[in-house]
Image 1 (cartoon, helix red, strand yellow):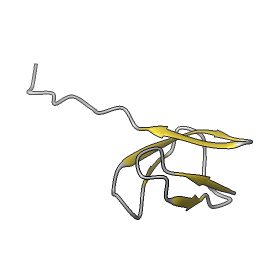
Image 2 (image 1 turned 60 degrees about the vertical axis):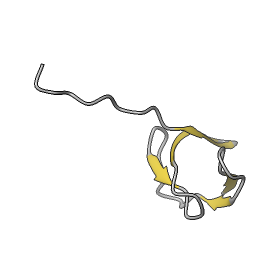
Image 3 (image 1 turned 180 degrees about the vertical axis):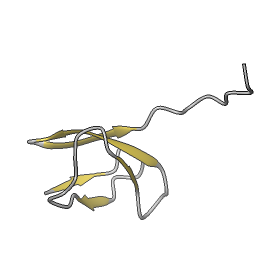
Image 4 (image 1 turned 180 degrees about the horizontal axis):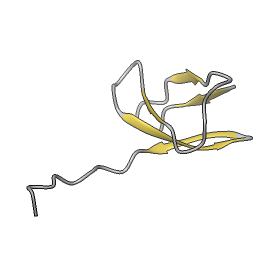
Length: 55
């Protein structure tokens, strides 16, 4: 399954073991992407996690 990075448009191949909601890293630009669909394959920029300063 092939799709493209939402940030730099690089081609990304999803392995057969890839699951929805899995976080991948683009091999070209290094941005984190979340798998939102497998059929058809789709990626979105992963949500940024906020720091938890022990609160």
